[in-house]
Image (cartoon, rainbow, N blue to C red):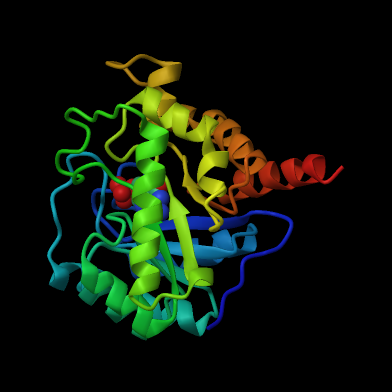
Length: 274
Ligand code: HH2
């Protein structure tokens, strides 16, 4: 299945986690029928594609084996394909990426930012889109002591270097998306600076994806560092963040709350079009 980014408005990427432990929807979609119904519902609400993940990357999450990731994905992917639902695969493992691309994934979403050179080989061979995300460290430890001297510059340099490696490895330039990785090895202030200066990443010339949905920085600002506001109170903060990101040039918005994100993006698009 081919996939093309919409023109004049951001694409909305709906999140589907086939995991027992994801931070906001863990355990909800392990049942195959529920997962498919949720994907179809998000499409009906206006999602452009569905990001399927079978390993949680929340802070402190344990690693999942390749076999387990494949086992979780196996029954779901052919069903998405049958329903002509475009989907990305959210994985850090080349074998899992290959497995999903063979079953129709149009985007390889790698939260470890192509640090494993085999990921570049997989993406180049498949000719699919690839989302390169920045993360400091690994999910198991990334929130222990994140530190930067200039977060915007460091994230930008990393993404530019990884995009160049991907191009040298045979991934076409127009297949590359970049993502600052909100919440991945970042303090609250780092996340805010990356959002406020997102135009600097956009200036690299690749479509930029942003994932702010239900993230902890929103909870920490609304509550406190030690007592963040709960997940169900984070939607307005996520929408505020997505609107700002869109105004600064983000092309893809990753969200759990598709209906609300679609509405917010529509209004923002209307305003920016005047
Ligand atoms: N955030 C999460 C997972 N994958 N991929 C990209 N490109 N950008 C993101 O910001 C991003 C991502 C974390 O959210 P979620 O999937 O809901 O949680 P978990 O990792 O616990 O499954």
